[in-house]
Image (cartoon, rainbow, N blue to C red; front, side, top):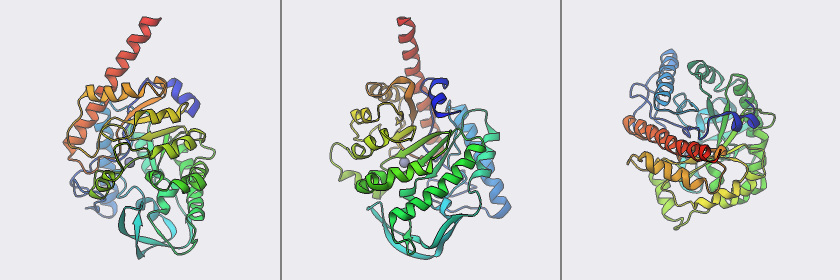
Length: 356
Ligand SMILES: [Zn+2]
């Protein structure tokens, strides 16, 4: 499916989650972000595949149209990818400030970074075989990767990002060949480092998608509902206008779809006008709040967005990942998402039938 075809041939208002779903308790500690695996070796491989099957089933049975792995195959959305690369020493750790927000002990880039073998391609093949629906696979974006490491080799965030973009492009091409329809890059760093986004961030992202015919997505958010993120959000004022910097650049870029936060966040809806012409994957489900949205609330968020995005370019989604939730809660939110999109889909087809 080429990106040109994808918006015309897919159903109106498709639903898709941004990223993670809770993992089963036999695979990793529930309600914990980045929780270590409980299994090892062959048991871990099998356990991840079982979890992936469950994630597919849970999405399908709750009406999600574009299926992802729910991050059942990774511990962390950035470091699990980096663990598979050479040039990064996970024993040699330094404390750095992540996204200008919280300190973390991170691995060190000690030499040239290279991908010696595919990282997620086997997992993606497994997902491909598990469903007939379109599938989406998420990779970290180059800038967010750079921001999650200490660099003792390149000593330049831009150079390192460029190397990562080349590696991501290799991986993305193989994911596409494995049958992945939509490839998403998670770039929360685009909401923080505005000068770098302009100077090299978008260019590095475009390098990562070079030559792909799969639909490409960039996901930019305000993060999981963890304390460091919630504290940061209280400093952002009544209107969150961070997207104002990146959206005009992305509107002119080769990226097909922009994934953003909306429901319960203080992002003014009219900012998505800056993306006119692009597909918009709109967060209509809050991932920082345990209250389950009603279908009407979801529909209201999507309806409001239609003032600024064409209906055939709107994708209904979550604000970010749902890993920290209880499973029943995440599943209820999946159901609300698809029920809300369905309300609006009915409204749109009714309006269309009245016109014709
Ligand atoms: Zn996110």
